Amino acid sequence: MKTLAEEKVKESPTTEVRVRRATILDLKELLELLEAHCLEWDAEGFPFDEAERMRFAAYVVGLLASPTAWILAAMDGKTMVGCGVMELQSRPVGLPRLWMLGEAWYVRPSSRGQQVGRQLYGAGYQVAHAAGAEQFVVRVKPERQAVWERQGYQVATVELRKAIAPERTPDG
Image (cartoon, helix red, strand yellow):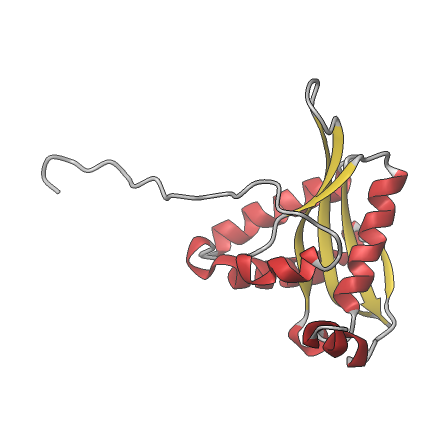
């Protein structure tokens, strides 16, 4: 018997997109989508003033140029409707030795519910496999955990955060 979530996925319309590796020519659209992702992820943690946008753009340009990073672009015609950022990571000891960390999966709100995210994920998984990764690791918000668990992912760790407060002066 299928769960309601599985039935909903099956009934949702599918927009066929072309998923490809993003290039520097995609920078403007990538920055738009990745900034939206950051604001959805943690609006208070990403105050995008002009200086922060410049730093963020430099970071994305570095990812585009990196031989161990992939930014995937989901294209509906000439419009980028989603993206995913992945980095191949390794360590000298322990297992897995080589894994793909998938971060910053984002689909435009107007394209959600149309299987665009699944197509991005599928392409990302293929890239990870071709790169020789032993595992595909994703960071997701707790409310999205069940979506990934239905794809066969298991909780491996729990990441907890605490802000580091600026030092207080004796006056204040």
